[in-house]
Image: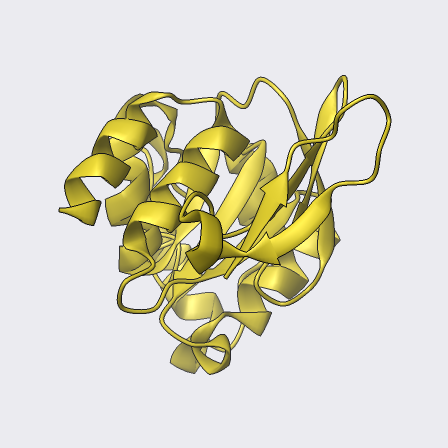
Length: 178
């Protein structure tokens, strides 16, 4: 994992091994209106500040987001991004018929849910979703991919809490570190 030494006085952020500092899993370069996050795939993603709506791809992402701020979660599909809002439950059936084998996520589902950010969490790079990335890119929504391996959970909570602007994530990180 990587830790970012926060930008100070216009200097470039310094990357150091996360285990040396034990703080965060992703690189976050904070600016006035956005944070530029270098995710686990090495992609630099501009994430708006003040995120109020976030979608999680897969059960691990949803579990983390539920602990941090369940009220901010918006739901996109039944396949990977889970449990649609009550008013869109019929959309779940439409999605099932449109994506036999779960090989794609229609971008309109992401557009309709209007998340500020999508979070994809997996235990290895191979398990991160190219399908979610393609749909998010088509819908114009930033997506952060996080590889969280055994022992990285506290750092992952701290990174996600910082990106989302949710201090509660630090409590979860402290608990996970025990």
